[in-house]
Structures are given as structure tokens and as C-alpha cells.
Length: 267
Ligand code: DGL
Image 1 (cartoon, protein in one colour):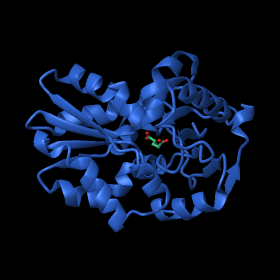
Image 2 (cartoon, protein in one colour):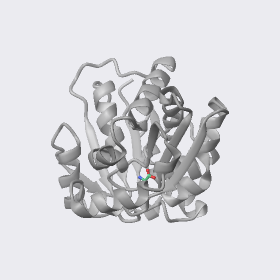
Image 3 (tube, protein in one colour):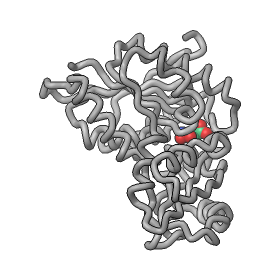
């Protein structure tokens, strides 16, 4: 089926998930929406994140998408389960796949999770990880300043190293052997986080497992695109086209042609 997969995030972070979808599902068409006018979601209330997510899903449905990926941990944590019933196509979030991967990876049964304030406060990673293995201890740490550092493209910078040190020093006493990058922006800080945590700690990027789950769901529902044409990728944002495009060209393996602005409040 050649309808596109709809993917959304509060900004550019979800492009780390699109990158993984491009790798694992190279024949699929993708429509991406980044809510760049309203980012960050991580400091907002559940009601607000729910309202934003509903507007975006309504917009994506106007494009006849065949599946929707919540490529945002905050939206996955606060909105996905409540919206699942009303969405008429298969839906995948990033939290459950990330939790599953963390449980697979940990040997010491001590897992760290970093994310936005909202994701960490929701306790959702803790809940999902302990559903899978009640013997795992989960330590969560909100790292709110990581998002603006990524949005400003300060991926390798002294300020970023300082923030990594400040946030992650709190995790050190727990001797975690797996650390979930529970925010779609954080895989872009993989290098400074890896340098700080050291080789003994596995960094879990939920994007990989999310794309794998998406592939399984499309297969099961016979929704895979059988056409072998070059896939089409469309990008929409709520503001800041140039900045988004420059960022996407760095993160994705392709250069994107155009980015369109959507008045998302009207959905
Ligand atoms: N992309 C969001 C997430 O994965 C983080 C950015 C935000 O706070 O909106 O949680």
C-alpha cells in the first residue's frame, strides 16, 4: 500500500526516528510534521500535549496516512494511550519499544532513563520496564536543557559537555549499565553522553526498535509498500522553515527538497 507513514514530533527530534525508518523501511513514503512553533512539549501539561497531538493527528489523517508514529517521547507518554481508540490506523509510539530494548540490554538490572520533565514525571518508562521485568531498577533523570542545545545545533560544544556532566553525574552512583535516551532529541547528543558515561554503559536509542515495531505492524496488516519507486518524503512544520531544513539536511541521509508551513491550530 503506497499511502505514507505519518510521523510527528514537537520539533526536529523526531527526525532521528525518520532516519531509522528510512534505513529499515526504504520503500516507504513518509510525511513528517514537526511542531516547531510550539516546541518544547516536555515542560507542558498533559492537557496541552493531548490537544497538540490531536491536532497533528487530524492534520496527518487529511494526508491519508496508513500508520502514525508518535516520534516524541512526551507525546507518547502523555497522549498516545488516550488517543489510541480514536485513531483508525495502526499507531506506534517510542516509549514501549525503548522500554523493551532497555530490558533486553541490561545485565545488572539497573537502567537509567533520561527525558523531558513531563516524560520522567509520568513514570511511564518505569512502568513499562517493570511490566517486562519487575527485577529491574529504573532511575529517571529529566534533562530539560538538552532540547534547546540540540535545537541550537550545539551537538559538540563545551556548554553541552558541561550540561551532560551536570545532569548525568546524578546517575553515576546507581551504576546503570543501560541508559535510555528517552527523548527523540537525545540521540543527537550520543557522542557527549557516551564520552561521559563510558563504554560500560549501553545507550539505548528507542528509534531503532520503534522502526522495527513499525515494520512488524505494517507486515502484519499487509500495509507494506510493494511499489519499488523512489519513496517520497514530505516535511511540514508549524514555523521556522529554514532552520528546520538546515537541521534535517544534517540529520537525514538525504537533502530534503521543501518544507511546508501548516497552520496547525486550525486542525
Ligand atoms: N521530542 C520531545 C521528546 O521526545 C522532546 C522535545 C520537547 O520537549 O518537546 O520528548
